[in-house]
Image 1 (cartoon, rainbow, N blue to C red):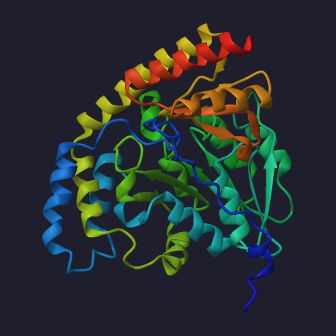
Image 2 (cartoon, rainbow, N blue to C red; image 1 turned 135 degrees about the vertical axis):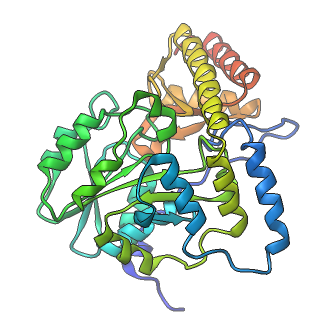
Length: 361
């Protein structure tokens, strides 16, 4: 039997959500950060119309999609790369710019796939402390080593839901050497766009990449469409590693149609924020801590890892699945994707029952 590369053998598998409900209980999943609302009807219609063209390969250059993204965000389509989800682009960046003897850096409780992508390239993954579960630019600057090549910052963050302002990202970039790439992952960016702090202009510095996704605010998680704005010098190297037909034809036209219905997307973000904030208020009323979130999920902090595990077991016994966060260094936390209002009320009610039963929070 041929052995794997040592650095691959040493890796832990990426943790997938457990979605197996107990016997007799319907699954209510708050695990995946999917939109509770289907995509725009325009997107669904566009995807259906592409069914008759499945014998043809998709456009490997994503021409129409890049033009549509550029129009919405007022950015240069020539600098846009599309991926099979933003994970596709994160993985390609790691393979293109990291290897043995290199390191990537991220906040302590960063999106776990940053670690997976880094280790799969044979590089070291370092972390910097956070400030109140929020990325800390000063701590990241202090943690840069001689071999640091990429800094990953999700903003807003996953699993915390917190964010740092544009000014701190600019300060971080200015403090870094030119040969250190800053990757700003804005998979949840649409939920914070109302703050009017875009960072696409930072890509002009030639060592910064900004990523986004259609999976969250646009409700197209199943279509697997991510994209990013890249400096020209980086674009060519990343594209060498992409599958040339990475985004299906149906997904491309669905994403274009979703972009053309900005009203629907903004309604989704507003509806999500309303349900999220009501849920967080309910959680606070129970004596639990729910972080302020700029995403479609809420992070709930318990008194101890044991309390979080106990609450999780109680919820799961009723078919309600939140996502434990031990893999992100937060064993005392559960992350709840925002679902329909009735389901969120059920989750809050079950947590109240758990507190009454256990006598703790």
